[in-house]
Structure formats: C-alpha cells, structure tokens
View 1 (cartoon, rainbow over the protein chains, first blue to last red):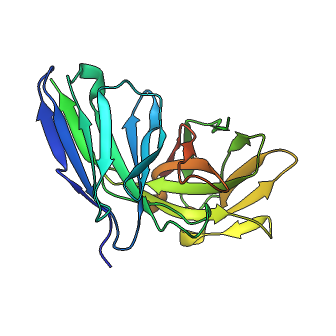
View 2: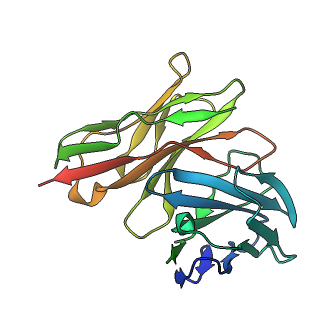
Length: 115
Length: 114
C-alpha cells in the first residue's frame, strides 16, 4: 500500500513569489491535514480537509490557503512568500469515519526555502 | 484549548541505558494521546497511542508509554536504547471527535551515545 506522497520534495523560491505544494493521501483516506515545521515554532497546524471541505484552520495569515479535490488529493498554496515561510511542510492523511483514535500517516514533507 | 509540554528539548543517553521522555498535556475535554518519531529528513512515524483501557501502552521498536490521568502525563520509556533510536520524538493530543487535527509538543531530541 503506497504511503502519503508529497511533491516536490524540495523547493527554492524568491521572496514575493507564490508556491503550490501537493499531497496525495493513502488510498481510501478522506482526511488530509497540513503542518508547518520550523526549528523555532515546531509543528504548527495549518489546515484540515475532509471530503473537499475545510474543517479546521490554524492561526496562519490569509496568504496560506489550501483545497482538497474529489479524489482526496490536496494542495496548499502560499502567496507573496516571506523569508519566514521557509520550513518543512508536512501532509498527513487519516482514514476518516473511524473516530479520532485512528492515527495520521505523514508524508516525507516538502522542504521550502525562501531566499 | 489543548496544549502539550515536552519538558526536555534534548536528552543524551548512552547505548543500552534506559530512557524516559516526558510529556504533559492540558485539556478540559477528553483527548487521545500519541507519540511520534521523526528521523532526519523524514516525516513522522507513529510509535504508539493511548485511546482508552490499560494505561500502559506498548508500541513499536520496544517503546512503551504510561498514561497518568491525575498527573496529565504520558511519558515515553524504553528499557535499553540503541544508536538507531537517535531521532526527534513528538508527543501529541487529539480530540476524541470532530477533528483529526493534532496538537504537538515542541519535541525532544534523543541522542544515543556509543
């Protein structure tokens, strides 16, 4: 069974540009969440999607947005990049409908560097 | 609101020695508890989880954790560590319904010394 796939693995962007990251969850998983990981702030929750609907959103500016498609694949977009957006972005998928106790499976992440 | 505190940012320990990584949480409602491990340049991998029942939970790679409701703690232990256990460990909580969102602690970097 394939795991969570995130593309690309590495990205270098310039301040002011925008970027789109992609996440393909495990087959059959309908819940996708995104996290930002930085050395200073640790793992911070960005968004959660379930069946194409955003169910929760973390405390991030409006420059961060996301969506989920009918096949459960998800994308997140960051516009007007700032140096502080440099981070590892992790996607996690869960087999929704089985209660909150089901664990999330994480992708290897996309390492975004803003220069 | 929920929060998770991992008191130790770094824990050095010699190979074959026991280790305990501490985790305390705060929540006014019931939560599930998890420990994840992250190896360099990798995503997170589940070690173990506590949902209900026995307070001692056994996970992969010889790790175990004990849920203590009165102390709101969920400490992770291993009786004998290996060099390969060197990694960052994250404690996390999640509400029991309505969301799959995790709230993570800041992580503990375990360094196993030869």
